Amino acid sequence: MPLGRRRNRIDRSLRERGVPPEPQHRERDVDETDGPYDVADAPDDGRARVDLGALRLPAVPGTELRVDLNPQQKVVGATLRYGDSLLQLSAFAAPRATGIWDDVRADLARSASGQGGRLTEVEGPFGPELAGTVVVTPPAQPGGPPPQPQRRSARFLGVDGPRWFLRGMISGPAAENPEAAAVLEEAFRQVVVVRGTDPMPVREQLPLTLPPQAAAQLARQQQAGQQAAQQAAQQQARPAPPA
Image (cartoon, rainbow, N blue to C red; front, side, top):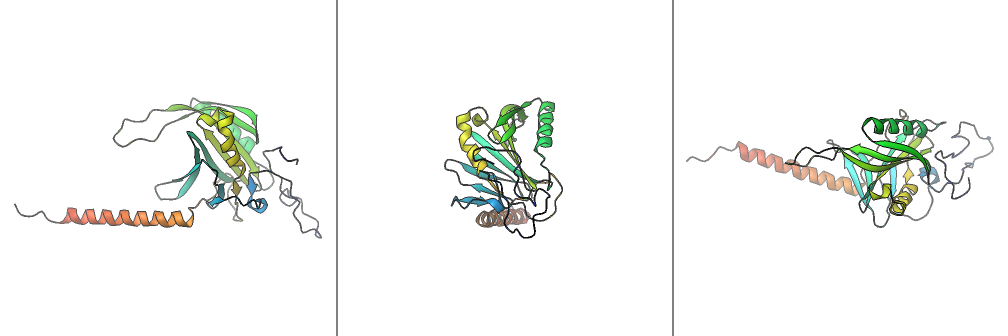
């Protein structure tokens, strides 16, 4: 595949396309790609990347990485912020021989329409993508009124790799302004996906983890929080002094 041209399906090798290679050949027959990358084909470009397990995200100047945790403190998402724009990233298991972006695109468009948004298929730098609006409800603020649904501009990018699918959602000014989108598109292009060898159901999200330093910091914060809660409980359990 010529450099500079992208397809949503990354054909990596004869083996990954379901065709057994000739026994005497040991080298992988890899089609050139300029990203996103499978870990087996990641470039030795010296670029710093944050290891989140299934995703290795590039350290792009001007961007800020946010890792989303669920109540059990498990990593469930990763977001790159650039000014007022966001790039949300997720990777999923996919079949060995076929991609899932065509089906996922249709599902996303139907879901957005059912919630009052509208997404249209357009041609983007990574092949077919969705662009338009989605309706989202901001998180509730402590002590504030219930949040109201808001309509936001969004783009959905997708790339099928060997047994994985990478999805990116760009929101904010970059969803409409090509110049603002350039930095986040380059970040998406430099992502490395680590699928692993474990069997997984199709469309199941690939597991994400915190980097060791961040995990240690989180553990310290959790321990401090537990100690503070125990001290507060002990103080409440003490009998009040006599009047």
